[in-house]
Image 1: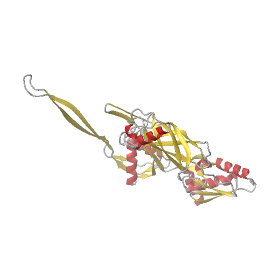
Image 2: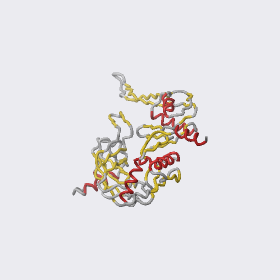
Image 3: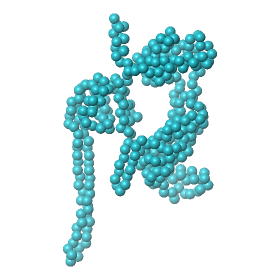
Image 4: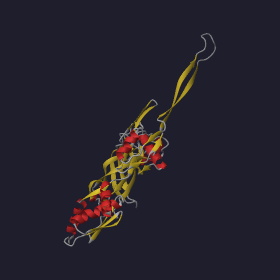
Length: 361
């Protein structure tokens, strides 16, 4: 009887069918982080200002490579920005592979929109050059400013270069096939580990066992003797389907205002009040003109007006929610934007009303 109840509860929490290879990884295959320092050029006056003294120095050093010598103090660069470039080198990557790079401003640039990263060498954690990257930067937003007016969308001083990284060194090697191998779940969960074991044993009886919530040990059957056959066995295991349990995570990207809610996120009954405080300061010139035959002078003064607006809903009761869809409907009933929802999620988590893990990207 107990076994039947367990099966029913487990089936009610599964989310969908996925490949074992998409759910797991091999041990000791942690990606290596590559870093580099470079210059983004071609900006429309949104580059580093005078406070970023390292940008002219870097640019002057680059010009020396082309036979041009100029003192860094003589450079006034508004279309150049110094950046830090990072990339994750996955295990098994080979020379010539292409990867994505993340570009982040180091100085006081206001936007990387329309910029192109010059050739930058990326080093591994031990200081050895492992790759190079160059190409146009995609920021996923915009930032325009003119005559004191500024319009921006998303975060404009960080962006990506898709497939801009070219490796000239191999990444960490994958473990060689042996009599047994280990699969590590990317997100430890005992339900998913048991599901992986069950799926493998249905095809290869008694080949897999669950060691802990993040580890499944798989023995290679005797009929797979050669290295090529063992690799084929591993590929078959990775292609097996498994019923993945739902996640209780909320992933938040504050740069773009993106929110992704897992399937098992729940919300306890609570009350929420959220308002937007807006302060507007406007100045208008006031001209004091003397009489026509007076000896006074025309004086121009400025009159300031401050307006404070605290728009938003009052304290509103939010009922409990047992699924991601109900959580979304409850928050939409507050009539707030996605960026306001980020602050609300953090407040609900601190109050203990949100049953989920917050992941900030």
